[in-house]
Image (cartoon, rainbow, N blue to C red):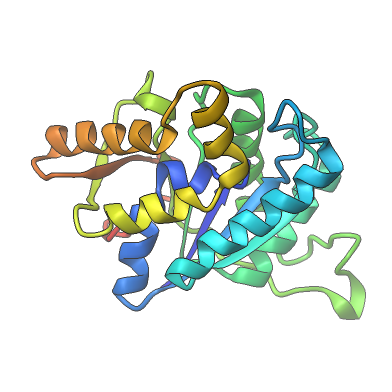
Length: 240
């Protein structure tokens, strides 16, 4: 099976569903992570051009720990808009290139405008990518890419689980340490929060996973909801 996890910023996937992605890998599945925005606004002191380069590298380092391919659409922070056709086309190209069997992305009710925009962007592009005659500027005519099937879509947990009522859980008790190790690769974020904000964000994420574990009868878990829209609904268990 081919899994595509789409986060907004370079560390969003590690926060919300890296334990699940590692489980997929352990089961022999192919996993790709795509971050839509490049994270260039995610620091007070490091300027955007330098931070963009750092955060893309941090995401690749995190993926390498679990053998996960990492890609980026390289859109600037706070400039992600679900209504822009050029951004939807970039996501259509991504989906057609990866040909996933399942997609994971942000909840449409997340706390941040970039996250909400990515959720809608993925929802729209995942259908658009299935249309045989739809061409994008980068891939058209003889260079057109094959369509991708419409596949199940799952929304990952919000930060601290605020306003999120899960319908699916994945036991990540055996992969929580790898999840945290991947998260720690995002040095520009975690080190700053420890040094300047007195926040141990890795412990924050671990606590959230423990809470979801308490809900679902295991030590640590990640939570999801299924996108209930035809024809994305399936009777198959798509999460590990």
